[in-house]
Image 1 (cartoon, helix red, strand yellow):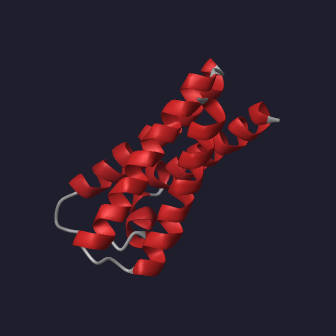
Image 2 (cartoon, rainbow, N blue to C red):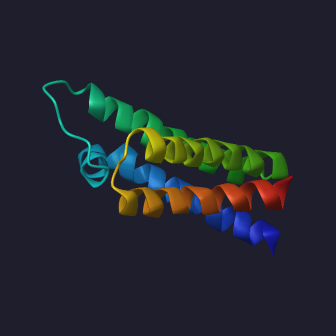
Length: 116
């Protein structure tokens, strides 16, 4: 059962990453990021929000080892931690932080607890 849930969670990771990779303008808009005269923001969306998660999710499925899935969990722990710090320091919209951060925290918990 853990193997199936790992694959589902990794596919979710890939799916979320595809938004940033394939549709960086949409993703930036959903995250309330403002466009500028530079296209570097789109590059950052494709890289850190997109490709990073597409490849890590895909690699974990390919490697199919608990430690590979756990590493995705650690990445999500970092994302969730960043959201918590942001709540304190930046005062972003709480509802959006709870939605995105909740997804990240749930995936972080699953990947780390189930695979360590």
